[in-house]
Length: 386
Length: 248
Ligand SMILES: Nc1ncnc2c1ncn2[C@@H]1O[C@H](COP(=O)(O)OP(=O)(O)OP(=O)(O)O)[C@@H](O)[C@H]1O
Ligand SMILES: [Mg+2]
Image 1 (tube, rainbow over the protein chains, first blue to last red):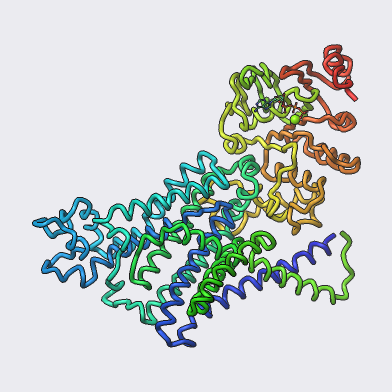
Image 2: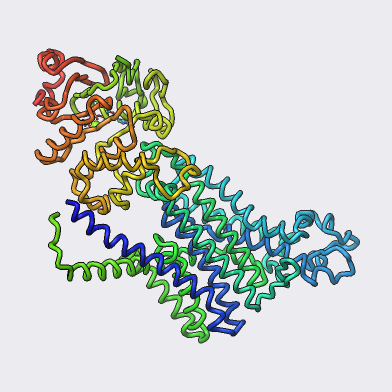
């Protein structure tokens, strides 16, 4: 009997070593990339894909580990992006050129009523909302805090009511659409469809992070690695295991004494915070925020990346997002391939959902398991009885 | 002896139909109580009421003197009620060991569980349960791949790991082979004394194996209560069972 326990521990240990190996390799490649590639244009592109990788982690956390399919993750990404962009907009030279010593977004001036005071307090009805964003750190903090607050309120209400499965997907989808409409509608404050453009650069301790500088790449890459490790730690804790149990059978978890909703709310909210952080980094690298961040197609794309990479694996979903976007960028240089690529991704998604629910990460795991078994097969030890 | 579970006038009214109707009984600490009754008598519903799955419309449930009537399920569980379902209910995507680990955490909330390792006490408890339930060889197996019997034992093992003081078992041997049933009786007998147990069971051979006191339910009501011999001789019980072929 002890033989069986011992031999069943071997593939486990092999898996764990393979796991940490992949994490280490990933971090090394992501942080080492600028040494291999000095094209800042490409580095900036990759930085954006790393941001998508962070979104993959957020999706894996809520969908893979908590079993909550959030089809509105773009809401939190968008909130993070807008909060950051508001601060960076006020730091932009376009907000200062208007003969005023206090910054006012250019689009507000263009649309101002004749004779209106050109000050954030009262240039239009909603402009006062911008006042605290004159401090860059306020915008950066809100990029994470606002998604956390919204996600907490939203998830507390839906999970306390024991809403689950497809209903959560519908509610989150509806919500992201609603907020997108609100943002477009609040044109005087948000610049509507056009979003926030001509932004200033993130400035820390006097250092300006030009998006086309390797330092900016390191900010994004370092953040991604931190988030990956943090998420990995979270799912490895007791709480992470209990969360997975609530995904498998919420009733059983309740009868073991767990407040299931509390676990769902916590991880849903963390996932939203990660998405908000991703939104912040995206704005730093891409220099704009737009209502298109809250398009349904974008939120659904995130789910596709995670599904293909493997939603039950943080690093799988992260790699899925990065690889799909990198390949897409490479092939979509030609118009024909661009269309074909959408088809291919659609097809891969369907195949993965039908035949490979654990995605590419699951495939890799099966492969290491199979290799381990082959090695054990060569072992002269007799097979333990079942 | 201390009273573990006291049920007083418990009633649930499903729009005019009373699935459990003014049910009263007292279960002592360490007792093993079997609940018998024909199909649809309200046995499962009674367990639903005790464990908080269904809200009662009348009556009270006290657990070691604390009122637990209609509290949320996880609170009742934290007070010490463990429940095994008629359909085996384990975490199918987790390994057997992970299932037991989830059951072992003494902390109900999120933040106290934000740590990587189990406390030694919990680990020891898991080891004892593994021994009792013979799950050692399958610890690394995904629970969804277990045999029917192993799944039932895992669920039982989780209740013990959870340190439930009062254990509610709904047909723990349903669908089991004779050998599996025997093993289950062994586990339940091992729990006697340290746990208070309520078992719903149809298999009379199994009931004879484990029973001390029996409560018979019929149409939501308590029909008779007492030791096996007395129940078998009770004319009202014979009457109630006539429709469904008697006690086998
Ligand atoms: N939520 C509900 N609404 C309406 N009727 C219900 C509900 N739950 C149970 N019942 C009814 O209550 C009665 C008792 O059901 P219960 O499942 O408790 O019986 P049981 O004694 O466990 O039977 P069995 O031996 O078949 O498991 C049945 O007639 C059932 O249809
Ligand atoms: Mg029943």
